[in-house]
Length: 246
Image (cartoon, rainbow, N blue to C red; front, side, top):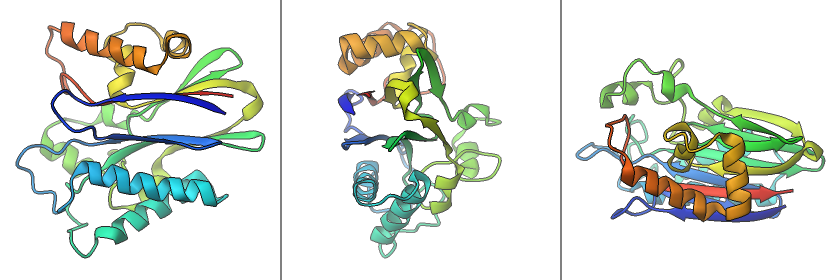
C-alpha cells in the first residue's frame, strides 16, 4: 500500500483534522468544532481529542489483529479513561470526531466510516463511495437538536465518550484484489463533489491520483472563496485527503 496525503486548516484556526497512515492501514479524523460559549464539560479542546484518539487507534492497528470496529471501541474507551478524572464524560456536548478508516488484512479490505467523512473506492474500475449520511437526515440543525441526537438511536454517531458508537459505524469487507485505489476524506474535502459539484466521485479519484491530494484541497478552497449563496454549514472547513494505491 502506498499513501499520499494533504491537510489544511480553516483559515485562522487550528486544524481539528488528524490523519495517520501505516503499512497496511490509514485513517482520518475530523473533530467537531465546538460552538462558541458552549460548556462541553471537558477541560480539553478538540485537537487534544483527535490526537489522543488517533494515537490510541494507531497503536491498536499496529499491534492487534482484531476487527477495526473492536479496535475503535477500545481506542474510544482508552481515550475516555485518559480524562475521566478531569472531565464530565456524561455531558452531551463533550468533544467528538468522525472516523474514516481503511485496512488491508491479507486478501480482504476492511472499511469503517463513522459520521460524515466518506471513503471513495475504485472497485474494478468503478467509483464506489462509502458514506454515513445519517447527519443529513436529522429533523433540524439547531444546536439543541444536534446535541440531543448525537450518539443516540435514530440520530447520528460519532467518536466521543461512548465506545459503543464504533459498532454503529458503516463497516464492511471487500476482496482486496478488486480495489486499485481509494481516497479517505473529511467532509471539508468531499465538498468538491457533494457541495460544489466540481465533479463526480470518479473525477475526484482521478484528480487526487494524477494531481495529488493538495490539488483537491486547493480547488475546494477556490470554490469556497467564490461561493455567494448562503448554505448550511461553515464557509470554510478543515480539509484532509489521503490517497491509497494498492
